[in-house]
Length: 186
Image 1 (cartoon, helix red, strand yellow):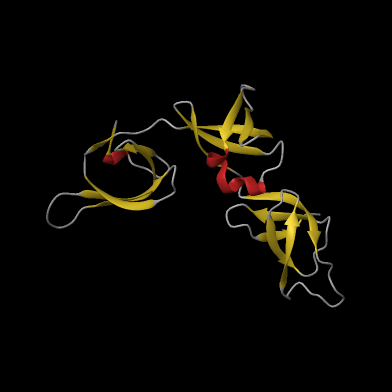
Image 2 (spheres, one colour; image 1 turned 90 degrees about the vertical axis):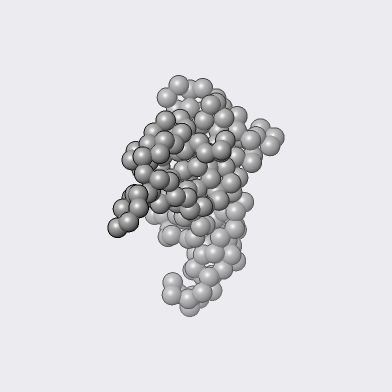
């Protein structure tokens, strides 16, 4: 248990049986009435964001979420197998938890897995990953970096937009948050 004075960004709360992460908070002391804390909370499982106000000094239940450094090993049917890099324990995580991150994951990829009471909540990838383009239309003479874009297929099977001069077998850096092209890797 914690009070509203202990709230900080990244803290995980257990409200009504659901886990919520504090995205932002603000202590407000109006001229009249009691102080309160205005928060923006994100549901850990669904990603839904809500605004919630707490009276100052109210007790809130915190959840113990353990973020572990893990390495993605291989895919086993609809499940993904990860290894804890400190204990070498293997953990099987369902496809629903990995979700959209699967588009950017290669075997031996380092990531962070959030665990709560032995269950995986979500997989957090680095902000950018380096992947190889397996297929894209060939570039034409005169295509410049300031020109348009074309679709390219990555080694994971994901498709992104790249500048016209990029060719197949080029290593590129991709933003895992929105799937945008960040540049070539030399």
